[in-house]
Image 1: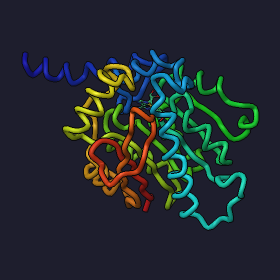
Image 2: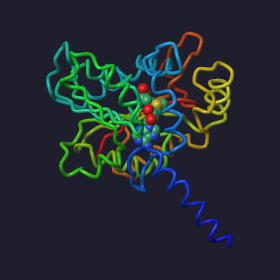
Image 3: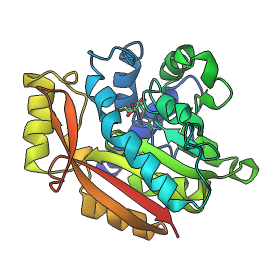
Length: 273
Ligand SMILES: C[S@@+](CC[C@H](N)C(=O)[O-])C[C@H]1O[C@@H](n2cnc3c(N)ncnc32)[C@H](O)[C@@H]1O
């Protein structure tokens, strides 16, 4: 009986993940139903720069130059002064309402933003300005669903998953799937939260219950991943880590800065071997 119960309880979360979206999901999906439901409830808030996603808007101060500089360093193409990322094909996984996809497209990159929550994709599409319609697209699919057609897809120069891996199941296969969609030497950018006492007290308790930077329940501490573990997963999946930097958020000024400390937030750029 206990064996039956244990087997069932392993299977139940998968069943829930199959029914959480309006379409069937593969059983290996990285989607955690509780996590995506939280984002679904906030799907109309993405572009309120002083609302729940204020810290993601201000994170653009760091992550846009980070992606731009690493991409330009990795390439021999002469860059356009006005559109420096022209010619780069990017995938923004877990794009939400497009807070990061849009400015990357504005720099000239061809960007596809994907998200497991169709309401987020609707918000992102609604927000596209006419001048970006030719190089910015959004799709309501998961990374795993995109991988099902991998042989028909032109591979990407870079794949970005910013503030996403702390919300998913199975980071190992998620990185493996990113590798399948990247060109050789293509770059993967991940920003996320470390699993430390500091990230519990400041990243969860203070951010959610004291400063109210994000709504209570946004983060599940035991899903956070240590930078050293993320490096191991990258190497196991055929990547070399190029940059591994700490980031610090000041909730009073709503500003981010680079830091030698990775105690709470950090950013990794890894290249496919
Ligand atoms: C904290 S938000 C980050 C949004 C965006 N990357 C940004 O930084 O502005 C996390 C996003 O990941 C999406 N998400 C969570 N799990 C996912 C999965 N397994 N596949 C694709 N998207 C996922 C959520 O729906 C949500 O939009």
